[in-house]
Image (cartoon, rainbow, N blue to C red; front, side, top):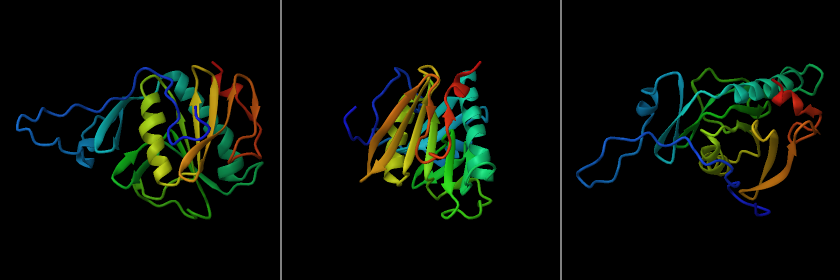
Length: 210
């Protein structure tokens, strides 16, 4: 990876691919996917709109679900509830983000309470998060690393974590001048103090346990 980049490198050979529309035999430009297309996707799939394309992914495999649950459990008490930590955050599991024309569903997202004092009672959140975590699988890694990271940079999301259970790795990125700067890759059983949650000593091994 270059020292600074607006899209981290790929690490998977597969991706969540755009749902194929009916072919347009008229030669007209393909229409953009809409929120109605997203709503038509079965509820057991994850649907997102990025750059006018509808991306449909399966629910996460068990390794990814375990890592996501363990990470949210580690962060929720000290940062969302203020138990044994500073509080000051709202953390949500798979919120639907409406960012311009794009609709994204990160695995976990967090807002500082000074920016979101009260969680709105809505389906789609229009306020960009301060932190996002994507848990990579072979279905979603390229979509997460490429297209979604570009949207997060455009919307000013300050911190992104990429968790890869297969590699047992946590990649930490910070947005500087509209570009992603890597702040470290932590692997295996490391104990990590990572922005923006540096008060916590995160035991990475908890994310990979079986």
